[in-house]
Image 1 (cartoon, rainbow, N blue to C red):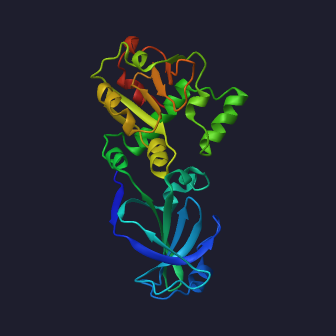
Image 2 (cartoon, rainbow, N blue to C red; image 1 turned 30 degrees about the horizontal axis):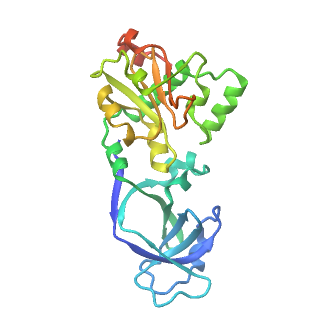
Image 3 (cartoon, helix red, strand yellow; image 1 turned 180 degrees about the vertical axis):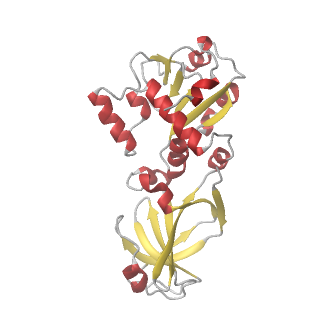
Length: 281
């Protein structure tokens, strides 16, 4: 995957507070009368942890008129997405966990031409972007097989949980088939070939980790993954091409001992089976 990473110097935005659902339409574009604007054809919608705001970049601030608000978007690196590519998560609350993000609406002669979404990224997110992964198509195909193999989508209660999951709420491990074991970290490694390449994906909560975890499947030697667990979201799904076993890390403690791993199958008895990856849907 090629993800556009853009480094930005800090910029000042002046604008008006708005509602979360307020659209940046032609009316907003025409009504935003702000002094010292850098580019009248670019409108920003800021999503902060505590407020929403529509405004324009200014070169300097002589004083903020009544009814307007000034903020500074800090210097940093941002993941840049065309907004339409992540429309499936726009209605979730997962954005709130990162503190802030912003939309950039590009107009030309009063007509909106493009909307980009800028998400501040952290160092670990840059590392995630550089991880070896399957292609988008291969990832989606293998993810479907994982869900079909290890999840229960027949039971009515599980169906309901899965529908919530598809809408951006809950976790995939809520719908695992019965028969899993709650294990500790040491049990996860038992019987594993530490040099074996494994696949993994996750349930993320920020826009970046949500999109990457639900779109791509990554691969890495098992021991390396164990050494880097803290680089990834807590709810992590690990398996190999045999699809005979999986271990799942959760963000919750699942028993009195504080164990937070789930295990289905036995990796030491699994046999590598590349053909299973290519079986028809």
